[in-house]
Length: 566
Ligand SMILES: Cc1cc2nc3c(=O)[nH]c(=O)nc-3n(C[C@H](O)[C@H](O)[C@H](O)COP(=O)(O)OP(=O)(O)OC[C@H]3O[C@@H](n4cnc5c(N)ncnc54)[C@H](O)[C@@H]3O)c2cc1C
Image (tube, rainbow, N blue to C red; front, side, top):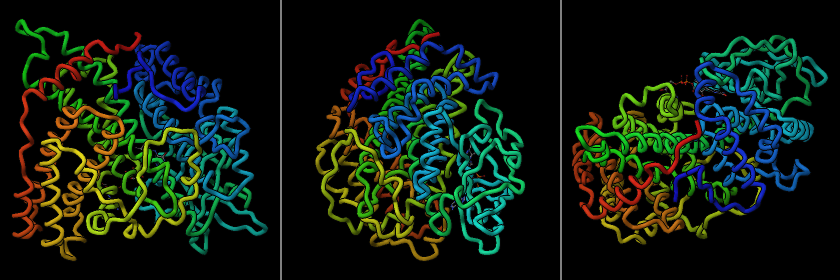
């Protein structure tokens, strides 16, 4: 059973404490019940009850403290179990995930810095139930962090005053430490420092969003800072911001997976038990198709995110493949999540608006994930930097297996300068596909081959490589290839049924064709490129038996598998 089902949480963990955290969290939410979660959501209630539970059970302290900074033998930064926790909390509500996520972002610059005093303070604050915040964004500058206006003015003897404003900063209302990004006056040198919301010079202006989360607009007015509160400065401060987002952005994929899984259970329970014109809604052929597509897309999302965890855990200064796989998770898994919710919503229609459902929240929240912490565009612009080496210059790497064992993933806080992306090498994707003698996988492989020929013989010219609109379409196809590679690698590790892989590649072939058609229609594409695009358009393998098997034994079988406690 690949999808999370809180009623049968039988995952493998490398230690009992990890299992205990997951089971306790499930129990907390099931005891709270859906109606209480929905009531808090509608009334925009700050999740004090949840944060008290987290504190009492030392959950963030165990999951978010690298082992070096804790006396607790179970404390470590373990990507695998953090994925699990991500998925579970988003399954119950994105708000519970968000306060954890922005704590991870806030802790990024702290654990990455060489300021040992602040690190010890952060570990202590985690033990005391503290949450954290990441003060990067400014109202006027969006993704353009180079234009940051928050300023630290030196006053001599290692003292400064900070002035400026931050916007959209989650947990900015009560974070134990707000990691704030700014520039040193005069030199323009970047710096990260920690701010304390309790000081009088910290003005909490407002919650920018109307939600349970506190997405703060705060201002610092002659806020005193000492060298002891500075985490990092210079170019390294910029790399720290980028490296923190490299790690954090991956979690958004898991939030989408958690949301879609819960929404899927609600949708199938509703449709399979609703009778119209004397038949079940799930008897309509188009409903079966939508559910099968939603299911396969969701399973694929999970396979990709699981596999990307292994590459994050084995990452080193010589193996930075995660820098491609993480934005793929961020951009592709989250946009697939939107597609899954749309498919399910098309089936359950009016039900998805009802205030008592989880779905009503899911339909709203799923849209946040492709758009925040870097839009799809920003991530595709990043992803295309890897395309040449991925296709044309593979490197040799030892095979990476499934990494579930106990280890603290400390490289994530020591990633080095976030540059040289175009030089990163990847293992050859070809053999990954060759291992599968599955009809739709073979067709997908043929589409890849045409795309490779496109790159080799109708290579985008200088003007096209500067045209972000053109690159977006190209990047969608490239991303799909990487997505397919990660799906197959994880499918092999999980021993996924061949029929399910074939059904997943049914939508993969269709999506490849859709993106090829999009690229074909670009005004900026040449005639030769357009011809290649048409050759990429293919039909997936037709197999009624396979489709029937997936529908009956995977999709409809989930009817009644999970209903949340009221
Ligand atoms: C609920 C919520 C919570 C948030 N939490 C935090 C937080 O805790 N901490 C924090 O620091 N920030 C946070 N943010 C800010 C968030 O990450 C912003 O999305 C970010 O600052 C970018 O700004 P923007 O969304 O206004 O888009 P803009 O940067 O204004 O982008 C406008 C358009 O330009 C495109 N674009 C921009 N740059 C590029 C590029 N290089 N290549 C291609 N296209 C590009 C974008 O795709 C977009 O379509 C949060 C925002 C919200 C709404």
